[in-house]
Image (cartoon, rainbow, N blue to C red; front, side, top):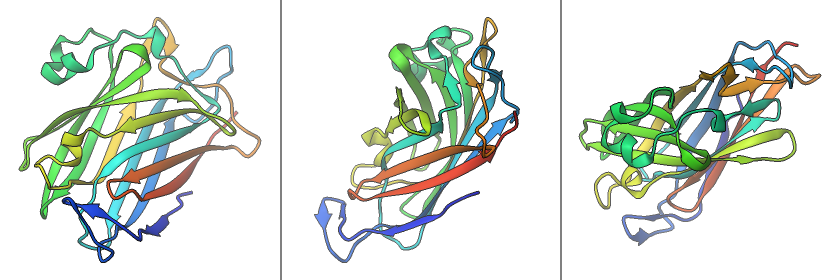
Length: 235
């Protein structure tokens, strides 16, 4: 089930100017895929591939960018980054091929737009040091994009076990100074094993047979939106 949340901002700061006539107006969604959907146990979690897709549909011409995204994962998913080799953000940015084998844990694609120009993005995901999850975003342009999001995996609460906090660097928000880039679509799939331990494991399936996920999206104008999704699972 996909929930679409539509929020219209009441104030916006863009290009250094503030105007009540400018406001973010967009349809924001999140879609999650888990494969396979049959759960393992706490002692032996099922190794799964987790795909996260976010879609942003601007409903007017107001310029804005993602400032921070927080993804909340169902408590039946466990993450084991400490079992995997790591690569630093500096190495990922400079030359991915220099990263240790096994540190790359996924990748994907994206679509962004700035000044009416639509650009395709490539995404590489690496296990970073100190609990970081690194996303290398690259596009030949125009405008040219090359940056690393250093996300942090943290414990969550309630029906969510973990959350991934993704602060978007300034150079990805504004690839050209004063020009905001809207991330229209972002798809990343993550999977891997290290000595039999899954990077992401599914330990169980709730009585509802639905895993819960949520995305909190914070924008450059100070407004935010929330979208949710559920994935059916089997015991």
